[in-house]
Length: 468
Image (tube, rainbow, N blue to C red):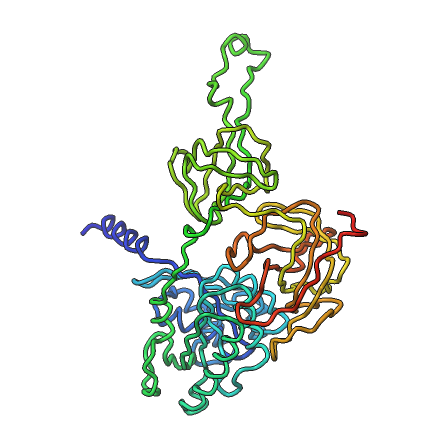
């Protein structure tokens, strides 16, 4: 077989494999970066020059063996401190599946970064040190995974070699975490006893834990069913850009061009398309759709993808939609099926994770970014803050500090077509932004937060005295 043919065959095989997005989380020194490094190393996903660089860095720190944690701790500050600070994305593949890995920080100061890494994840790996068990940061990571509706959670009980590979220790930690995750509404928890440093049950089964008969971490990642299909949800198409071809005018100094007719056809001159990425569902030519927030309806006349006309588009394709009627549509509008539409509203109640060092307080004026639309908003009320120990709600906390999870009531300057987050992670989420400097303040999820947790009652917002 020729090299070209072999490369093409390999490319075909890779394209045929499914894709899993997953995030890792764990407290400081639980061995999360070592786990990721071991996963990459033992699955043969590390290039030779990368391994050599890690070996040199390890020797400079006085270590005899390569420190696999350095494969993911990419920032200079991370390598010097021995902790993860930023979200590190890694792309690797096995013959069975392709992976996008988001390695998130473990320090409480950087919990906010887990929201970034887990927001698009279909699975979260939460590490626990077998010597310490479930700690507050473990509960916080479980709460964030539940808040973001991550459908699959793996509990990796690490450093089993430091507790003599005791089955009783693993069973106790797995039971405590599973009970807590279930109370949050996490649909599935898979517990795996591992030693990331020694490689036990990460890629290959452990010879020290014959009492465990479940899958290794990689086996579970390769076989877990990614069941949710965005095409099963109602179609949601946020408009990112309106395409109108520029008018071609002859240059006045050129007599030949002045005399020549315009090269544009009438069809080209009349072209008006709405470009964006389909957030969910399927759109077809001939579908009756409604444009929000105006509420006006039309029919899909054509769909363009990669310069070609197509009859159907599905999430997450980027396409251009053309409508039969000339409607006033601009960036930030949402196109949805007329029979499965969403009701725009200026009042929004949501669960949020506050990300900024500056607290969020009632009365704060912010910008709210939902899909491709950004509007002014006011924080009208903060009804409660979640206590992670017992999942109770502390009423009227007055403010949300960094890493706090709580309920907020917002009033927006313009109606927004926001789906419940439980129905759509894409169109049910939003960001609150500081209008002064553009920094991200808060990540929000519309509607109920946790499927199994008790929620605080929220009073109906009062419009009196507000600007909008």
